Amino acid sequence: MRSDNRQADQLRNIELIRNYAKHAEGSCFIKCGDTHVLCTATVEDRIPAWLKGKGKGWITAEYGMLPRSTNSRMDREAARGKQSGRTQEIQRLIGRAIRSVVDLTKMPDMQIRIDCDVIQADGGTRTASITGAYIALADAISHLLSIGALTQNPIVEPVAAISCGVVNDMAVVDLNYEEDSSAIVDANFVMTASGKLIEIQATGEEHPFTDEQFQSLMKLARSGIGEIIKMQQTALKG
Image (cartoon, rainbow, N blue to C red; front, side, top):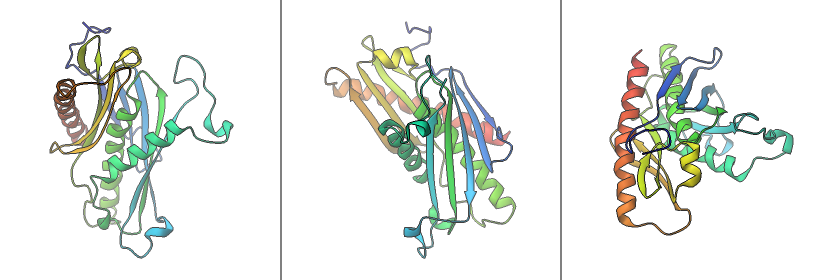
C-alpha cells in the first residue's frame, strides 16, 4: 500500500482551472494532489533572430519555484543571479514537449511564452507543468483564432506528462514527494493523445533497473497519461 493509500495505478486528484490569470492569453492553474502550478501563455509578435525569414513561429518556456513552495524557504533564483541547472533542464523539457505537438509553420512570426510557476511542490512539478502548459497553450490559440490573428489551428494533438517509479519494489504512477525521494527507479514520461512518445527520463537511483521494471512503468504511464488527456479535453470543453 502506498503512503497516501492510493493503488499502484491511481493518480492523485487532478484539478485543471482554466483562465486563472486575468491578463494572460491562456492560463491554467493545475493541482495534482498537493503539487500546484500556475501555467500561463503569453503571445508576442516577435521571434528569435535565428528564425526570422523562415516562415515559422516559436514556443519557449520558463519554469520556477516560489520561495515557500517547499518545506523550507528557498532563495529566488533572481536573487542568486543565475538559474540552477535543474531549472534550465525542466524549462527546456517543457518547451520541447509543447513544441512537439505544434505545427510552427501555422503561426509564422509569432512567439508564445509559457511560464510555469510552482506555488506548492509535492513531487511531479515538471510533469504537472507540461500538462497545465498544454491547457494554457490551447486557450491562447483559441483566442488568436477568435480575433483572426491565426487562420489555422497549429496544435496537432494534446500532450501530457506523468511521473512513475519503483517504490518499495512496486511500480507506481504519479509519485508524491515522499515516494519520489525514496524511489529506486524514478521516471518521467511525456506522451501525446495518440500514444506517441515525446520524452522519457528514467534513472536507477541506486542500482540498474530491468527491462521488466521499465515495461511496468511504461504501462502505468500510458494509462495515466490517457486519463489526464481525457481530463484536459473535458476541461477545454467547459
